[in-house]
Image (cartoon, rainbow, N blue to C red):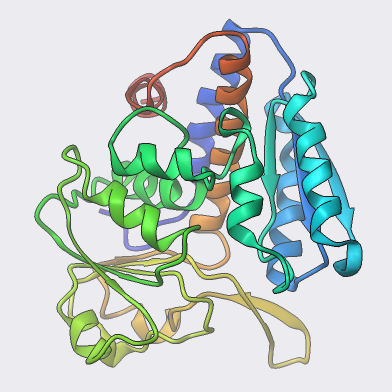
Length: 302
């Protein structure tokens, strides 16, 4: 197993699979990406998405709304996209303004165009282990583990963070019978957090606090998956991006760990486009299973 779990080769395998699908089913899938306001880490991800559209043979349109645009206006834009046959996938970039009802926004997105799988119907499909979209960031964690041969079966797997975007869906995916991890989800009210982390065979952090996970919070030879992307001021006064884990302090202690940037985030963008292609296929009446996508990425790309 490699020490540094780079996202680059995983993303390359996903990109190859996406191009193969488009070669077999010629089309130009279109995504509408809606962003309300401009939060630093969010803007970083948005630019990555837009920059990669052409590479996948897809279109990505950014609808950038000001903070004061209002929830009703956002809902109208979502409804237009839901019924637009030329828009195959919709992504609402988080976070939204605090005054917005996030549950209502998620519910308003057509489940067949819901690229980040936040509609309750898609979340329910994850819990029931039935077909649907896999949310991009949790799926990036799963694809990374699989690519590097890290088997979660029976492993004590600890997730820091319980959001609907990462923590909750990732916990449920890891509990699927094909993965069979033993999962603990921690949050801001968890007692003895450091002790729980030290018992983890696989520790996954998605809390958005720079360098929160220190060396004394992990055991020797743990696998460390860092989902966080946090902007901080570097030594020269410039903005830099770091993860939730103190990478340098953890490097020698970990069996394997993901870098930030260049780790999970890089895979996430590729999976977003794979979901977009899946949405375009659904619109054509073709629905490939999750297992078919996994086979396409990890069998036909070996």
